[in-house]
Image 1: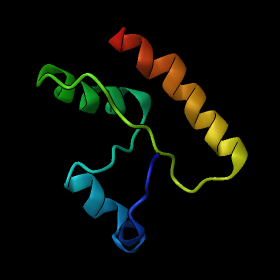
Image 2: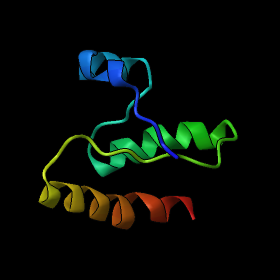
Image 3: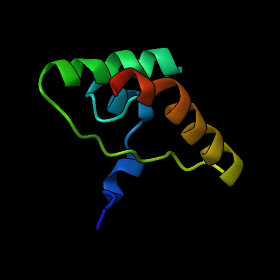
Length: 73
């Protein structure tokens, strides 16, 4: 079961990015950021979407599946 921290909604996105809690960017930027964790030995990630409408969620998942995941197979 996944639990979302309720206090994160009060933290600016820029602060979460600086702390490495979230990764935001184009597919190349996200892959580059995730690769740092892979190189450090991380093998699993949890994907959480930002509060987007349904079409934006599908677009984000499609970008992730077609441009980011293939780099880590």
